[in-house]
Image (tube, rainbow, N blue to C red; front, side, top):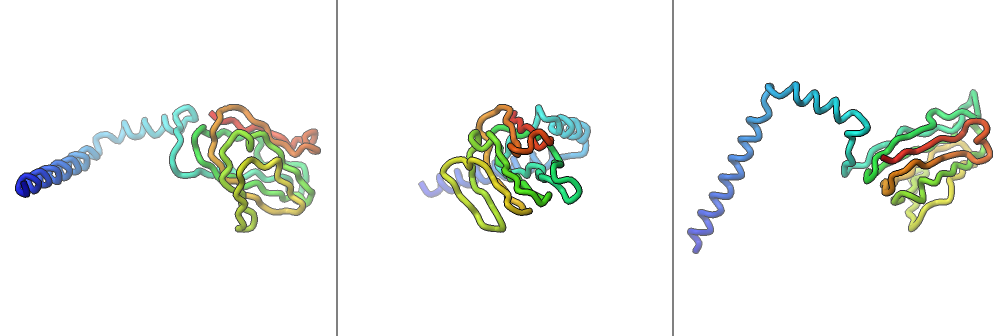
Length: 166
């Protein structure tokens, strides 16, 4: 019985090593064109797929020293099933109340403020900036759709946008 186990183990190890050598040989230079075509396809939003690693959403900056009512980006595109980190920064010297219906449609992991973590069992109603600073929200997208974000009292000044989850 021991001989059978030893032979079976040797055969298994041999097959595993053989497969590794075949894979190594498949990575030759002759398929560079196919890899480039695949990479260009993956760059399109339709081909982008969720991964296990969290991704960074481009930072949203509310206001600036020159214009208290400006935002650096209004619309964001995310992928369903993906984990994200999103920094939202107040930089205009006003009190900003950031509201979004996104928080009710994602799995909220944590909110980080000055390296202090807030873990929730539900969604925050809004984020309020009483002074300039950054809040990082970590979440996983669950429900595809188009969600809105705004600074409610300043939407008429252009402080609003959308978050699309595909």
